Image 1: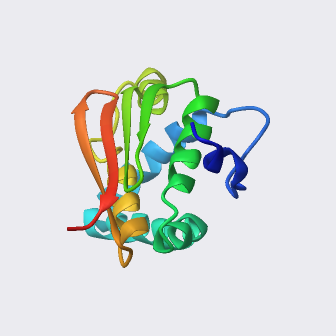
Image 2 (image 1 turned 90 degrees about the vertical axis):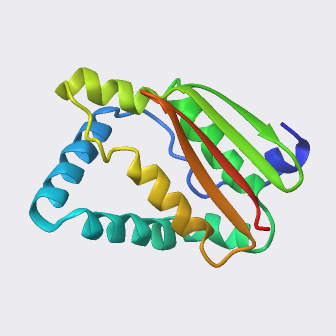
Length: 154
């Protein structure tokens, strides 16, 4: 990782114990909301998360600092012990998650992961990028595996 990344302050930098059961609660909440209100409402919630909860990261991306998103990804994937890699270029960052510990924990905890579990990543990322010079795409590579790419819009 380059010096620019380590010199920036990360707003979302939880420390202390990692509570993986949070992902189980998220999975259950996703299923409840979709069953009661529909997938469009769930997607609206994810959009609000991207715009409001991650407003600081969105502001960095808007100004061209996509490295803050890489720092955010690295912080949380390191904390949870995921198997991943990040390739950082000037106008593109590729996060490849080979083993998502959140997905695996939910599967172990409740047996079945919601088919919409990864939508929290996909829809939140789309909202973070909306209205910025960048797009964030997410490709599901398999169970507990994905590739997330942020790059300049064409």
